[in-house]
Image 1 (spheres, helix red, strand yellow):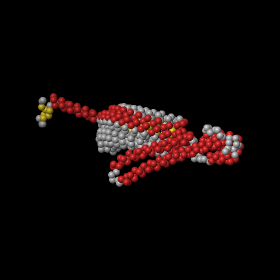
Image 2 (spheres, helix red, strand yellow):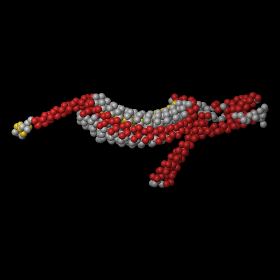
Image 3 (cartoon, rainbow, N blue to C red):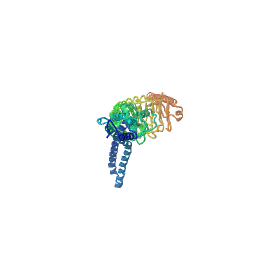
Image 4 (cartoon, rainbow, N blue to C red):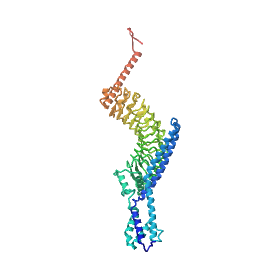
Amino acid sequence: MATARGMTPAAADAVEELTRLYRELPPRPAVEEVEAAAAVLASADAEEEARLAEIAREEEAARVQAQDVPAELFDVLWEARRNSVRLRSLLQRKEAAHVVELERRFKLFDDLIQRASRVVSPGDGARGGGDAVVDLEVEANRNPALAAAVAAAATEIDRGSKGGLGLEPKSVSSLHRATSAGTDTEKLGLIQVASLIESSAKKGTTELNLRGKLVDQVEWLPVSLGKLQDVTELDLSENRIMALPSTIGSLRYLTKLDLHSNQLINLPDTFGELSSLIDLDLRANQLKSLPTSFGNLISLANLDLSSNLLKVLPDCLGKLKNLRRLIAETNEIEELPYTIGSCTSLVELRLDFNQLKALPEAIGKLENLEILTLHYNRIKGLPTTIGHLTRLRELDVSFNEVETIPENICFAASLVKLNVSRNFADLRALPKSIGELEMLEELDISSNQIRVLPDSFGHLSKLRVFHADETPLEVPPKEVVKLGAQELVNYMKNMAAAREVSRKETDERSFWTWLRSLFGCEQNQGSGPVPV
């Protein structure tokens, strides 16, 4: 056996072959990649378990309604669904499992190198892997024939000498820089995303932009996402993400989160722990509901829920006291919670393209509201509290079933733009007090059944845009409407003035007629005046 002071040629050949074998190993993954792979495997297990649990719930509900489906066919269908989930999870694990197994094999080689070092230099068995390299170098100094082989071994044993994942060396930090700059056209796989998260967490990154950067196969994010403790702005939009890990609630300093244009079905309950969140974009997903913890987002100011599958908004929405902008267009919302009245900071509320039949009276409590759009719903009337919105500048209730507009809308004195068009056969008159909206600049009454404008219309001195297409107006005549908004206003003003003069003259004649009937003479039939 070889000793520390001498080595036989055969032993030297063994050491040289050992070094050559180590040099021929594939690239060793970096520490960040190994950590990322472990996170991916943990996430894959959790995601598979969650999806199988969801399938089990759906199967139980479907079994009651599947009486017309043969039992065996029903069982085959749901087993196929479970198998599909397991298969997709297996594919997600593949790359991460390869990295973990690769690292395990490297550790075995590390142990073998240490054992070889102990053989060459007895008594140093307690030393670590780095000391093993030193021992080989010491022996090489004593035996010049081993110098080149030991030097190569020292280089190869260094973890940082090889790139990761069997590809050309490319550090995670460089990948992050390219992604943040938006210049990297290569999309990231799940293991690369996990590596990027690990690297960003260690660097204390505050802004991370992954908009459209993930390959289509990445449908969920690893649990390591929760390590991004320092991130304040996170953009995960325009990918195909179906689920967020519960660890997202750990991002306590996150102020801006963009998740638009994904495939999110729901949000984890921990989502409400994002207490610093100010801007949240969830548009163009497949959300059917919001978690009850959503009301804990007390810092939220801007919320976009448009283009989802929401049928209701939760009552907890009323806890968002700082919410200024709520966009919930293109959903299936049938009613607003009464608690909406507690969102007193709201400035803009857009509810177009839904299934609303009415607004709650509490809408009148939104004293700071400036924009309210209800285009394309099924609303039949506005609440009388609409007049309490003294700061309202824009109101759109077009494409609804509105039958009447309350008279007290005149108290919304800041109104600049009013669109009541395309209520078709339902809307037949404007409020008589509409002339009190002295700030009104744009008015659209197209495609209604309005035939006469109220006399007060002539008081709309600031009106610049007026549309009445396909509305059978008789007063004023269509020829006047074509002359423009101001000509129309002047016409209605003059007409109202002339009617007032005529009314006064009629009243005066009626008065003298009445007076003569009391103190004058009345003409009998062919007999002349007769004293009363």
